[in-house]
Length: 202
Image (cartoon, rainbow, N blue to C red; front, side, top):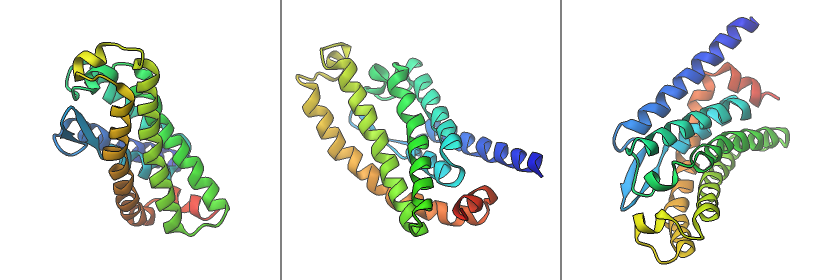
């Protein structure tokens, strides 16, 4: 039985990983270009994985996204900003791992607090999305606020006002989208996931 559960989990992780890769490389599925930036929907996949599978597996799926995003940056297939800042793995990989970890931990805590399932999905999705936005933009500021090639690439005079604009124009819509879409995906998927069902029976 334990081996069957392990094999099932590996299969589910492989499925999520395949979805992440497809979202990264098929145009307009994972990234929607808006000027020099891209609005992402991939964080929703990581959030759903964290909701169903927990913080460890959510972190693994987030790490896969981060690794693929880093590969896109170093192979010049990312956005104008991505090709400059996402070559730093601390920016491209670490925040994506933490989306899954923090979302999974938060969902575990909400389950223990007996928060209703749909509210748990909603809160976990919004927080997970904000983790991505806040950490990525914060790390960009930490590494580039003293001036670097990011200014040449984007022709910016000041980095902080730009990042705040990105947070408002992209981060908030991404959080809203995650709050709507992630619960809509997690609810039916939970019915077919024994691992997820076990989590919510705690």
